[in-house]
Amino acid sequence: MDISQQRRGNPLKKLDTAFLLFLLIGAFLSGVMFLVYEWEHENALVRLKLREQLDISSWSKDISSSFSAVIADVLFLSELSDLKTYLADPSPANQTFLEDDFTAFSDFHDTYDQVRLIDQTGMERVRINRTVTGPVAVPLIEMQSKADRYYFKDALILSRLEVFVSPLDLNIEHGRIEEPFKPMIRFGTPVFDRNGVKRGVVLVNYIADNMLNALRRTSTLGPGQAMLINRDGFWLLAPDPDDEWGFMLPSRVEKRFSNRYPDLWEMIQTEQSGQISTDEGLFTFTTVYPLRGRFISSSSGAASPTGDSSMTLTADEYVWKIVSFVSQSHLEEISNRFIGTIFLIGAGLFVGAAVLAWYFSSIVFRHCFCTYDILQASQFDSLTGLPDRPFFSEQLRQAHAHAVKSLAGFALFDIDIDSFETVNETSGQDIADKLLNEVAVRLSRSVRPVDTLGRIGGDEFGVIVPRQQDEKILAEFAQNILDVFRVPFALGDREIHLSASIGIAIYPRDAEAMNDLFAHARQALSEAKTMGNCYRFFSW
Image 1 (cartoon, rainbow, N blue to C red):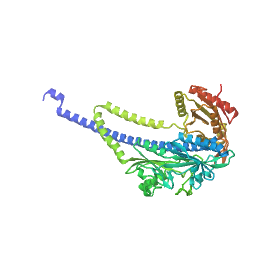
Image 2 (cartoon, rainbow, N blue to C red):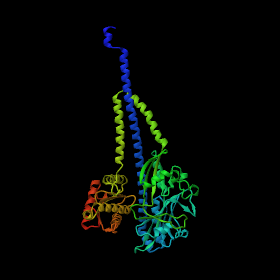
Image 3 (cartoon, helix red, strand yellow):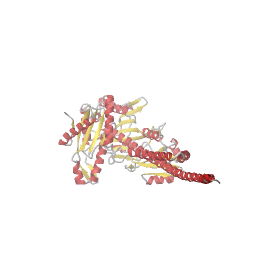
Image 4 (spheres, rainbow, N blue to C red):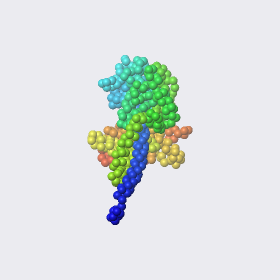
């Protein structure tokens, strides 16, 4: 062997060293890729679980929002001026005026199958039926007595501003379940004449298919299948429609979630919310109490159309479970998807550390982006559940944009609780927070579904009233808001009296820029607070 060959070394030995180095690098990269696969797979499952939790939380809010809107509508109908006039003088002319009001209301709200006034004897006096051509007033000769119906009796015994909500079930006509099925919830509240005498009830039949179909549509956007289950374990909404309404259909009486998943149902009943993994897949659930936080009553309903309710239900007993189900096959698809991906990424990693760095950065970016989306999901005040100031300001901006486009005005209400700092000083923060929450509940009942109510300060609330510039109508609306403070707030064995002041600014009359409109509403509020318990419009 010559000197040059010795200096170059043994080619086979160098080849062995390169091969060994290649094996070491390959082993290292294989280990890294295995860890990356495990990490990415775990993050995918975490993102899936977070999305499922956000979905059912959104569905729960949608259900509560639907109930709030219907309750507000029923209370609105019970206080109509034409209704008070009709109760004082049930003449044909006043009957026509009231029918026109109910018809216009039903035409604007396509979620109600019937809108009725029933007198204290149980006789229908006004009834608007929804037909394929629109709402139609039923002639007096076709009116029926509903004195033997549980929903009438349960609503009539209530006090002012209390609302009865029936169970969610299928509509029954002439003693038989209506086909095609028509899921229905009845909302009713007693009506009083101008002398404060109870004269009957206002009832609306809410078409619950609107709420159920909304759940069906939103669940198709993600991997989870939405289910809605009543307190007895029966499906109100199921992936297979043939499993629904077992408590009303003898042929389906055994088709219960609780029968199909007995162990799972036992766990779901004992927890408010959670996620459970089984051999069949991932179940995400939460509990919905649509009647909590309101002056609401309910009952178990009756087995027959003319029966009495078997029991009264409290707000905590009127409960549904929302469940989202992701099948095991879908979870396996996530795993298989990453197995193929990881081999492609592994081949790319041999190109160099730059590709590896890029891949890791992309994973971190996706993970952080997902976390950012989750954090952005909260736009509501944690105490009252109302839109917070930034979200309210965004709604005001949208109202302004719509007004500019449609050449329609709107009003901004700035509401402040009078001397609320005294409550903080004398009763403590906990009592003050409970009071604020109760104030938010009452204000929510006093506004219409089209209005936007938000908490924009400590004891300050805002209301956007769209498409309205008439001072007379706005004054009535403001007075209705002030009236909700007339009834003292009951906290345990204590009663606390509050009042409020309201400043009102109208777009575009008072200002065209939103900052100026806010400032003018605040100026009107300052004038109102000098008097206390009143409202003032902005004036130059």
